[in-house]
Image (cartoon, rainbow, N blue to C red; front, side, top):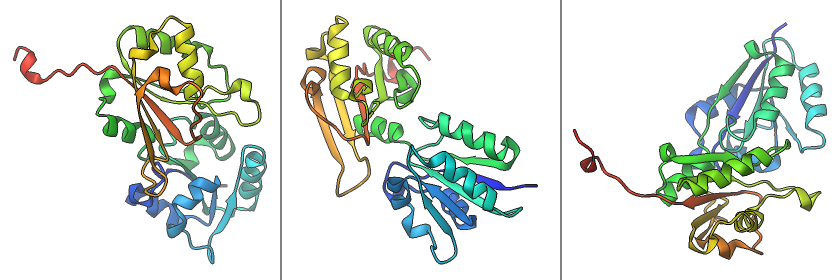
Length: 241
């Protein structure tokens, strides 16, 4: 019995960043299962008269994944869209979907992530940066130590903070990160930072640029990405041929 699943990266928020590969996969699906924000991004590609669409949240997603799987006929396709790229910050959900559908029945379609857009807007090269997501449910203490190490080594850092609406003590958002670094002997008053909210959403996109110390006490959206900019520009003219 084969029930097929597309795990689809749909970009950071604007339909303009939706790839043709993602569109093709969406059109093949009898079932679409996703979070509200993500479904909004792909609404123009969904035909609700022919496709069964389910909106999920953290509490009900597993029940709905299993419900849809049980309803599907052999050879039908289900699509689970993720904001950005499903290969970044979504591993816990992707692993569960692989468990339900079986690796051989799942195709992952990569998308454009907020990490990529933030790097482009801040002109911070990905290949010379420490990239980390705190947007996980597991323990983040090792990741926090790696963050301190990367800052002290003079690396730029591109990161996804962790919102936790139901338990503020588990938040690790921009303000929390600023206080954490200061408490670990980092001079945050001299550390350049960008915060991007709702990237590519023309009506909502917001950009903060300043010093990390200025982030203390400021609340940013759950849909945000942070860049600590320690770039030292080097061109090919500085290297021996």
